[in-house]
Length: 255
Length: 175
Image (cartoon, rainbow over all chains, first blue to last red; front, side, top):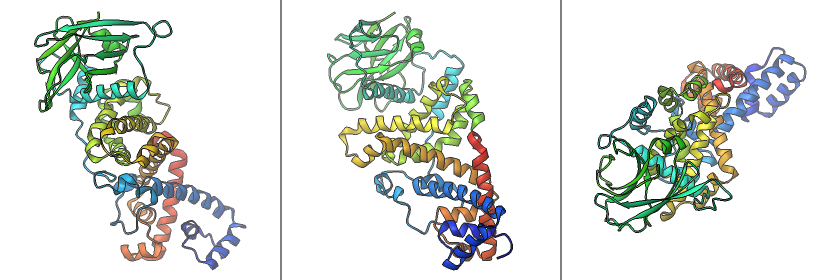
């Protein structure tokens, strides 16, 4: 083997080289700086591709090639990949046009009028994250105010179609724990949603939904808390388009 | 990606759309590892909305891909916690919540960087590498399937690996 052996190097890495080739290539590599350098680069790329294919084969799904023939790696043989309810391969991406519209609206600083705001589904979702974050992170909003951020209580009174009252506890400038367990249980297809509104009720933002026990915990950006002045709870229809229903049952000013 | 990250951190709304166009498939695939199909759309929405809301926390010097996957991991954990009413594989929960979860996010980050680099290779090189690594074909089998000489497969593989290594070693956050 006198010339460079660049094209044979990948065989060493993929296990396709036979014994004779391995021995021959090894002897050549001990004497050839160029091929050793080439081997280093081949190792880098091989390691990267092998890792990608082994641990995240889904990511390579968009790479044009022939239909897969071999079994997927162990990483793909997990719970999600074997469950028909799970999406482990590429498919149509979820439609995020509502998110993008909301983001453009926020970026433009547009105030969103009550009854005309749509579709806040993503914000409901976002608020749910917020609630989940608070719960998942073990945040307890009723903590002793002497050892943490300042806290205060806000009373929410029956409003519009409501007949019961509730209370909220605000901790610092971005945490809220709402106890509206006095609200009557709703039938199927309806749920309680929590909003921040301004004093004149000309703009509002959804921050999340009440749990089945009538309570919820939220983290709300301080800027958003500062933008609005009151907490309001409405009854929403799960089949609705996601806009404010116009049927509020609780309201309380915090600013 | 670096350019998208810069625009995102400066509050440009179209950056989020570009971010989704670029990283949406990755995030969707990642979430598909842990979540039922029915949950993925909502969680993807949450992830990218949070990407926007937390954009001021994003440091353009760090990997946008890694940052977004970090958010996706947290939201997937939230979703699994909320699905207490349904059967969720213990392995899936353990996998994403523990150290392995971070490792998997890192693996996806790395795999997507590799895929991005691979996509920058000439089609002929890209094709033989994908067949070899993602589908497990030998070089002889690739030659048969593509009906090209074995020597051509070897050359394309060798050149492709060299170019890919250069991209990965020199690409950094631009991949």
